[in-house]
Image 1 (cartoon, each protein chain N blue to C red):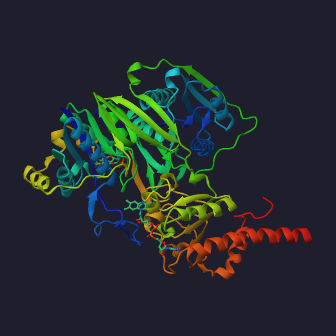
Image 2: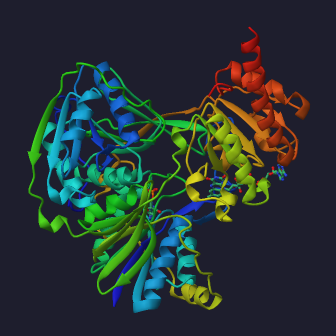
Image 3: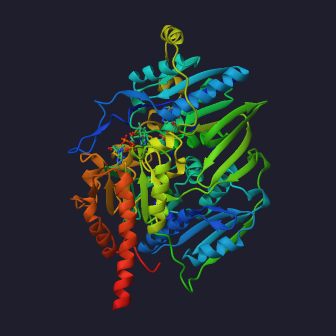
Length: 350
Length: 264
Ligand SMILES: Cc1cc2nc3c(=O)[nH]c(=O)nc-3n(C[C@H](O)[C@H](O)[C@H](O)COP(=O)(O)OP(=O)(O)OC[C@H]3O[C@@H](n4cnc5c(N)ncnc54)[C@H](O)[C@@H]3O)c2cc1C
Ligand SMILES: Nc1ncnc2c1ncn2[C@@H]1O[C@H](COP(=O)(O)O)[C@@H](O)[C@H]1O
């Protein structure tokens, strides 16, 4: 606990060096979002010739620590205890706080997942420093100041936020934004492992049950086929699934179908759903209200299928198909299938 | 009896907010002000606990004087007491001083068993204030709760995570942030509204909280916004396609290497 106390600027900023990243995992699997954080963390550290330091916490973490090193991290701090098998805010925040006090990173990053956010501002307050949430652009300047950029105002504006006098400079980053790190052959790294005795007073939270769900991670999809209220019912999504399967995409939704129970919430795109930036976004029966657009307007190519020629989504679309989707989607499916056949036939002829 | 605090924020109705295309700022003047939607879900769980075992519910909000309307609305739904934390010195706060100010308010109230908040606000959407408050107070937290129950000194809640539901049990005192849309908030009652207006909203400033002016608001914020710029959006073709020409779309997508057809 930090107590009711102010944030304090640090006296000597030069004492703070290197880029820290918190690694989130479930069991032996590192979260994709954390591999993205290694990617951006590595980029920042190398730009200013500093080290990337990653924190791994859990019960048995040797495998994960090694993998993190292979991704290009320089120093892996691994904290191990049977009491740390499951993520719990209090002991995890304590351990990260202790590491920050010892290693004094200049920058400390976490993925803005739910557990990442659960932890992030708690650590910032503990360290009496500032934090910027949900960044989509991160950079560092020659003074080693973190330039943390986050979208605001319904994704129309990018705010650049600085933490000038407090250390570490903290930020969370939106999953799906940064390119995941790739493994580097022969990268030299060091693992600093610590067996910790967790203070029992921090273990008050009982985790009674974890019920895994197969959630659709739309942020990883290169193609999203999304349906809206215009589908008229849950069956419309079957047709969209057929199209998505054909072109290797995932199915998304605007909010009303989710609220009506036609599809589960993990498919929702928008301000209160997931923010996606796929290569292709097919919007079917979606009008294009600002809260929806906020979650998909950075898609490279947008196809709109809508009965209304004046649907707002058409303003940001590449291909506008003004038709009942019950005709248009099957036509698109056929065109793709036939296009394939045609190509194969041409290839065979040649 | 249980003491529950619900943290609420007044925000512009996001379905009405317009963005000034030239200045790239929120045109808040047009939008109605409402209680941040997730905070109403938080209040609803507090009220359900009150219905079940009895509780004293205090709604607190840091904001300008006009935010008292949001607090009255919460009292009209069943909260017992409302406190507006308002002072010029609080303006421009980032999440650190916001958390500090709210935590100081809760500490001054004393003996609080459960602190509720929303998972995030629609206007700043950081989700950072709740956990920050918990750290200032030194209490455990349950974030992204979509079901919340109270039994014999424990809060039992289901956390909604990306890869599953986590059911946790924590002894009070504890801070809980509630997922947007996780319940249906009850309506305001006219009788309660009249009572609320009669009772009024208390107003606390920096002196009541014993905080220093340089600790709060803009001065107490470790982060600053250096610049705002319009986000460059991808250019689009705006081609209208009739069904007999739908092959063209497919051909374009294939040539751009966006979809692959045949041989897969
Ligand atoms: C705080 C807040 C947060 C929100 N967050 C989100 C969010 O995250 N994501 C989100 O999507 N929304 C969100 N919304 C809701 C948003 O404001 C809109 O209500 C919603 O996006 C509209 O969904 P829609 O386009 O599917 O429905 P509608 O606006 O009703 O549009 C339906 C479209 O279908 C077309 N159509 C009808 N029949 C057919 C047919 N047979 N064939 C082809 N087209 C047809 C119509 O022409 C129309 O354009 C939020 C709202 C609020 C207040
Ligand atoms: N000014 C405020 N006054 C009261 N509660 C707040 C305030 N700002 C944030 N909160 C609470 O913290 C939650 C998360 O807000 P945020 O971190 O801004 O996304 C909100 O849903 C509220 O419960």
